[in-house]
Image: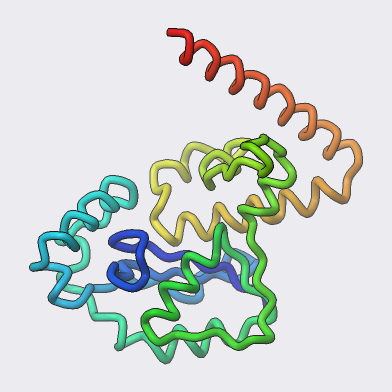
Amino acid sequence: MKLILDTETTGLDPNKNAILQVSVIDDHNRVLFNKYIKPSQEHFTNTDLLRDWLSASSLNGLYIKNVENEEELPVYRDDIASLLNSADELVGYNPSFDINFLRANGINLNANIHVTDVLTMFSNFYKAKAGNKYKRKNLIFAFQFFGGTKKYLKEAHNSLADCFATLYVYNKLNSVNKNPILKAYYKLKAYVVRALEKRRERIESEA
């Protein structure tokens, strides 16, 4: 079974920040799990943790009022672990971020689950150089590059919306790579978009 995972959190550090939402869908766009999560009390009272949360909220839109009446993660821990460990393949956009947060909260994946990183897949396809590596393009960029609609963007960074967008980009990459004509078209599009990006960066640097 192929599952798509995404989370929203109060920050970037799994050892101090908290999970605010966990979403899982299958490769047929069926929602298997989608819950908002109330952090531990410390995240409501600690100034540094609240500062992290406020910064994250500006992206994911999950403020105290959105989660203060929800259940804490231990209520769902076994359900999440059981669901994810039923997968043969786990797909995500930078899934190591989500997995590290789950692991920090006592949810570990079986070693035999294949993890697919759509961020790496897209970066290798788009091929925008950043030194000796390819630039890491965010999910919204990848989604729009392949023609994703603006309807999704209204909920961008909600983890359920991001699951659907991740699956969309994953399927597009797989279908494009199997079709020489489509692949040539999107490679040309990537070349043009990269050129426009470089031109804009040059103009901004000279301003």
